Length: 245
Length: 300
Image (cartoon, rainbow over all chains, first blue to last red; front, side, top):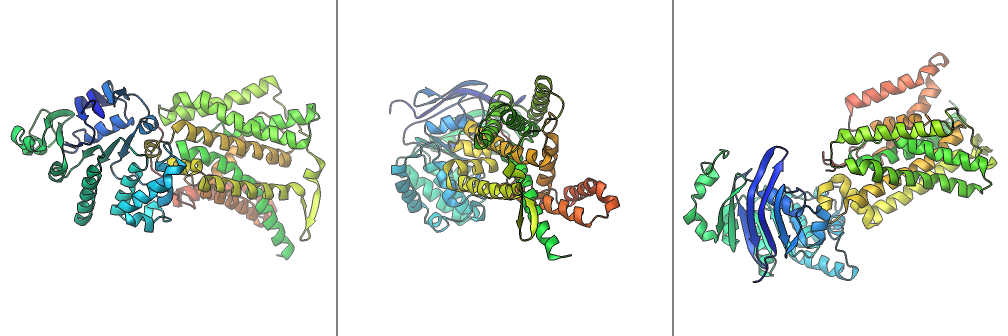
C-alpha cells in the first residue's frame, strides 16, 4: 500500500484555553478499518471533527491522499472525499428521508448516478425506502442511525468516519449496525470508527488507536492492545496524568 | 355587526396581514440560518423606498421598471451587507454580529440623512395603485388586492423554492443544523448569501407597499416595519418560515380586532394593548404559535 488515505501528523486542538488534543498522529490505509478507542472526553470526537474541518487544529498536519486539508472548511473537506457520520446522528428532523439523502449528495451530486446511489442505499437499508417520504424526526433511533450512515455514503467517500454509531441503540440494533460496518468493510470501504463499545469495534478493526486525555496511549494491532496497555486502567482513568475518573 | 363589517374586516386583515407576513418572513429567513436578528432589515426597506422615490420623481422610467429597481436594490443591499459587514464577523460571537447589524442600520440612516435630506419626501405612485375598487360591496384601494395577490404569488414561489429545489432543501437543512449541513457539503457562504438576498428581495417588495400606504419616505422609516416584524415573529415563532407568515396575519387580525372593538377614547392606546398581547406571548408561549424544529446552535 503506497500513500495512506488519511495521515494525521501531530495535531494539537484546543477549545479556547482548554487543550483537547495534545499531539495526535494516526493514519488510515486504503481499505482499512481503523478503530479509535478511549473514554468519554479522551478526544475521539475531537479527532474526527478536526479531520472533517469542523475544528481547526492549532498546529499539525492532516493529509488526505497526500493533500493538506487542515484548515479547510467542512464543505471543502467533504468534497475531497471525507464523510463524517456525526455523533448523535444529527438527522434534519423536519426534512423527509428523501430530502436528508438529497442534501447528503449536495456537493457531489451527479444526476446520472443519484438514482443508482439511492437504490444502493435502499439495498443496505430497506426501511429507508419505506420511510422515504416521512420526516426524519419521526424515525426511531436505529432508523435515524441508518439514515445517518446512508447520508454518509451518498457522496461516495474515500474515507468514512463513524462517530459512536451504536450509541443509544437497542442491543438488536447495535448488532445490525456492526453487521453493516462489517459489510461496508467487505466492500473495501476505508473506515475510521469511533466507538464506546470498544470490544465490538476491536473485533472488526484491522488496526486500533487508544486515546487517553488528548494523547495516543497505543497504536497497533487490536489484539496487541490488551498486551501492551492495561486497557482497564485507561478506561478506569488511572492511566496517564489528569485523567478523568 | 353587519355582514359588510365582517367582509371589510377580512379584506383589511388579509391585505395588512400580507404586508406583515412579508416583513416577518424577511427577518426569519436570516434568523433561521444565522440565529441573527438583523436590525438593519428596516434600513433595507428604507433604501429600497428611496430608490422608488428617486426613480419615480427624477426619471421617466415606466412603473414596472421602477418597482423592479426598488426590489432589486433590496436584494443587492442584502447581499452586499452580508459580504461586507457580516461575513468578517461570522466566526465571532453572536453579540458581534448584533452590534454589526446596529452599526449597519445607523450608517444607512445617516448616509441617507446627510446625502438626501432628513425630511420626509412623497414618492409618486401610479394612479391605479390608490384607485378605489368596489368588491363585495366594500370600497378598498386597489393596492390592498395587489398586496394580497403579490403575497400569494411570493408564498407559492418561496415554498416551491424551499421544497422543490436542492438549494431550498439545503437551506431548510442548514436552518435546522448548520454544521451538519456543511458536513454534507452544503457551502456556508452560499446558504447565508441566499438567505440575505431573499430577505432583501422581501424588503424591496415591502418598501413598495409600505410606502404606498404611508405616502412618505424618510431616513428613519425603517424602524416601524422592523417593529412590526418583531411583533409578528414573537406571535408566530422565530424558528419557522410558516410561523413568520402565521404571525404576520395574526398580528394584523389582532390589530384590526382592537381597532374595531376598542372604544374611541381608548383607540389611541391600541399599540399599548398590542404590546400587552405581545408580552403575554413572551411569558406564556415564548416559542410562538408555530414551534418549528431547530438546534440551539449558531454559525461558527
